[in-house]
Length: 168
Image (tube, rainbow, N blue to C red; front, top):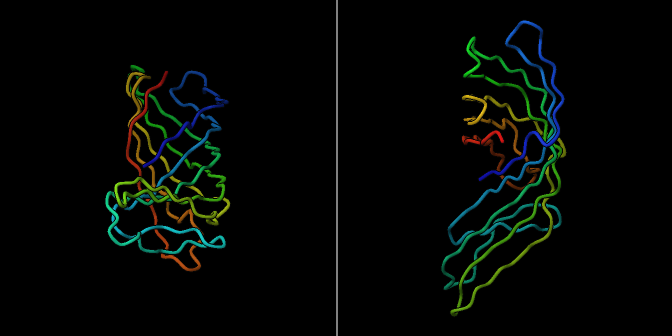
């Protein structure tokens, strides 16, 4: 799952007489990678390793959370009636170390375990395409071609995000 605030700060230039805008956006993003099995993520000396939840545990959930500051140079093109806009460009992520949390129930008690920090790749780039309808609802697709986690001892993976946001 992902929660983002991509345009906390925005500087834009509208081309005169055209439906094109260039902007640079500063924001904040939170990505969570989850598993709901007896496997858990463990942060150990900056590395990510897999482990088992205790035998007999139920309602298990383990997640990795990555917080990032973002910088996005974007180009947007409006249709002639200004009712629809396509926005595209890279989203540069300045990643902080990731954290791991595992939650489970065992012997009628809730347990929550936080592990050490997990090293991330300091800077990654996501590719963004958004469709803005009536300057109110955005539907976006974002692809991260490089794993945000350092993968010395863990498989590398890429992510796709699909979602929506409201322009307020």
